Image (cartoon, rainbow, N blue to C red):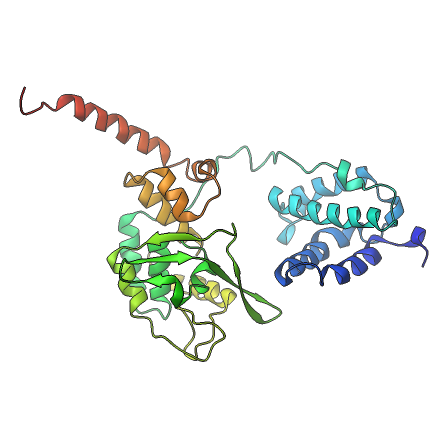
Length: 320
């Protein structure tokens, strides 16, 4: 096949084969899946040399409109990731002499979603009473302790499942979030956290007690805090399924497993914990990101601050 007849599908096959030796397995899997679902179906049969900026711009808008599951619009962040993969692939094609121009460098990812951006961003969480009710109703669940630690730390699913005993210090008590558990082609793998930074979290007594009572099982590839009975790591997707399957027995608003992280943050913010501290506990890269996600909590905090200032002025010193 000549370079002129090479299709995007053909090129992606070659490019992915090379990337498998150049990037982490999880990254390669993401490349393959993103290409499979969001690049190949529409653009795959186009000749590589005939691919245009207009093709990409129109494709990205179509993904925004109906490119997701069941014909729903795809998130802008997902489209941006698909674009970044294509940009890298075509840039490598230019370097290899297959292309004279990287059209993806001049294509535009949608910056505004007219349907979603018109609505304020909302995070689903539980309040204190609902958290207490959940802990009571889920007390007998096989993963009840995992749910409790998720609520007590705000850790991501992969961080919880990748928590090692060497990262826990129950004398303080505290833990460090240093690794996250993933599964690639059925094989478990510990890797750096999402931000590639290690963060230390102090624990309340109840959360520390829950961690401390976990059996130290052997038999798995890693000395993890939360494992199956045989010591093998918990499968991330199975954990999420267990979360979803418990709803018939709960009298609570339905939220995602990841929303336990949001619940942890909003309860801390509502209790007056500084947003910088909350941001550091969550492992966010910037405070601005934390403020953007939890903007719905900030007005109530501002009202509390105003009320607190008023009380300060109303109080009289003993020596007056």
